[in-house]
Length: 564
Image 1 (cartoon, helix red, strand yellow):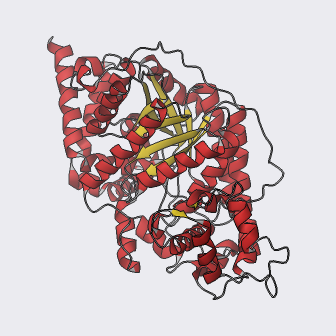
Image 2 (cartoon, helix red, strand yellow):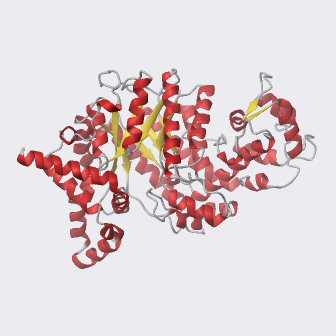
Image 3 (cartoon, one colour):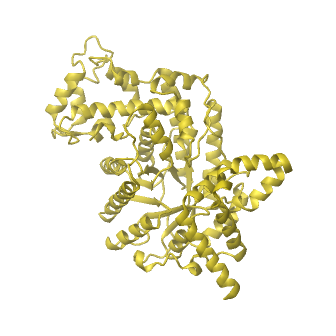
């Protein structure tokens, strides 16, 4: 296991008054089971079949929007053009035009009542919904005077605001502004309404959540730093780099970095004495210790005692969170735990989004803990793996193995990723190797390996579910082919997801063929979701091949309906 793998260490945080176990239940699909069809059996270019459930006015509007997205100068300057138009004719008129065009294409509505027709229309076509309240505020100017951010700023090699500025350049993912704990509490209320809306409008659907909306971003960076340093420590002891330590190897490495005498350390109870650690890591005396057992042992409140034994004050000691930071981290965990309990009680599945690599170890750690608590009887919590990152498929397999050992259900969404530009820029700025694959084909290969690992686990009877979130037809066809070769049917726990308004030829034909097809369904007031709409326009302008195919199919179907 390489030190750069960033496998999420299990730093369990204490939970406050909202903690409690709620019964999980399973969801029963009404779709009739049948053997999975191979990719060759589905013609994704059949425009008549793709748009069978759509009205002609809908198709004309979709064609107009997608054609507009292909006008590069218009998309590049869209923000300035919108601002200028509002100054000339007024915001209400501009918002009205946007609402009837781009908003209608990429968003479902403004609230629970107005999204219902779109969700019901999708369900008629055999498509479920992943609801996401898409209102947002950019986080490029994180205030420096908030206590949590000030306390945590020293933990990174560059400031959070520098990283945030890098993250806004050409990335396609939403970001939240943090000005204080009041923002986080407000986001909890938004997510509560989203979960409730899924329950009321789309009972078999998902709710999407970003963890950076629930706590200080700087705290997530500090937590991630601590996790990375803990994993790096294991990697340093793993001198032959095979991911496994014998008792002798561990003892030798532990003595190298830590005092084994309890005297003059902060470890008063001797929890981190060598004998105590060995008994916890290898209770059956099997003579084998790996990263999963090592990360399972560590809890955030133990790190001060562990580092008090350090022979030298190095990166691990510097990564330990202060009492104030632990308090802020606890508040964040309490918020996400509350939402997980609510989702479990309402039989709603939560999809936790992936974010930048300087946040991701803390996010992974938090999601692992949520899965262990809430995925015992049902697939309630899904983690997200960005396969444009080197080693993403290895991290997925490690987490899958952890779930099998700990006896909970593993649920994953695989994506290619949304932060490629900023990740490369930040790596260059800080002088470390970019975590992003060097070429697109490496990303494709990693994505398909992750899919294959999950499908193999499902075929072998492991409790695993997978969301293949992709607009890439090749990846969808790869998954269908693998499903058929493994003898898995449409109800095996594999889902397909695309954004509303994009790649309809994939979603609608998958739904028509009884696969678990889903649309990522954003909603919110027009003015508040404008940044989301701008990103979708930019994303479509860059996907020239895919958009060209969609516009060609739209023209073909409109022409067929008009002239027969």
